[in-house]
Image 1 (cartoon, helix red, strand yellow):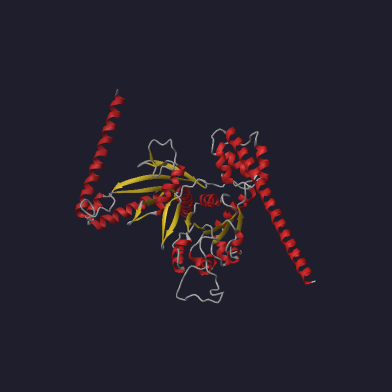
Image 2 (tube, helix red, strand yellow):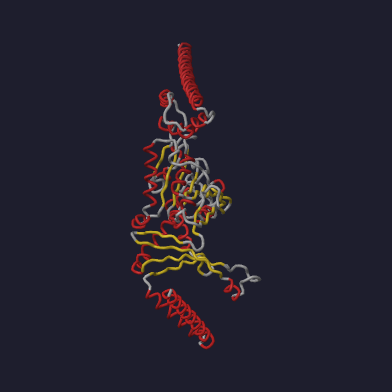
Length: 485
């Protein structure tokens, strides 16, 4: 019992001492606030904070959502980066989705903490929100003001041991920026632009074509992918050799062989926007230049059916003895080539230029040389490998009893991937669809044979006509010789 009384007495003394200290602290604070000028108080508190920070082993970096009136790019990068590292077992999570085509995005809620490890070092993150209404009121931007000032200021606090400060600044933060850039590129919605007058107009590009669904020879497909990968990684190389950072591709082949699907696959693979230039809407070289310098970097310029889109004038005007009016600035081959590899080609970086044609032989050789169209890609008729890809795309099968018969006929018949795809789409039942394809290929083969026979008959008839004409000529000559005698 005596020990209990002693314990209680000690507890009462401790409580009394703590209360006395708290009261003294409040009294001192009140006296300081009343008697010490604001500037001196601020200096004292700053000094105390400085001592406390030097005594602590933890350092903290504050990343606020805004910097003045502008968004803080590092805050946006940290938010995107942490979303890829967040633990969904956290008690409180913020979940959002801004596009129905995108997945849900997880982020930290106010007051929550999480840890991230980079190169063996732990960094702790905390989301802090503070009310800024008093500051907005004092600046006249509160209620009744302009309404542009944010009442809530968000910031990330990144804490770590002070010995890792250099790593945080020179390694970890640049790593966050790099990862966030990749995440942004992967998640952003691609755009396709069309020209009208001197302006571009954009809509979202949701074309589903990818290299995995593209029906073409695997080796050719892989060579295109490797070429694209090499191109996007060679910024410094292009700078070193003194060339504009661009690459040209010519897609040629019969209609229906997948040229447009190839362009969409390239855009999805690189995450590049597409600028579909309709040259028939462009009347002057000056307009063409304005459109082309208005393109963004990391984009694809497409001119489809380059051989028949517009009658481009020759570079040497007046070749046939006529001189054009020098005041005219009509679109010419020279104007187009000047952008492809001339001085205007340096108006942007990391650009792909694609020309398509059904008839490569009709193109001016000046368009085809390396440096303009660097890689020529033949989009040919359907082959057995293309057929297997299409069958997998439309019916999710890797093998079927009819494959051998179909592939043998595809080797003999000129049929485009578009034709094969259309037949496979006619029925969801795999057996019925493949049987329909067999019948289609047989009709195609018989039709080709009949066409060959028709051509042969026409050729023989033409030869007979020529022989008869020659015979008539000889007979006439014989008659004339006889009359002379």
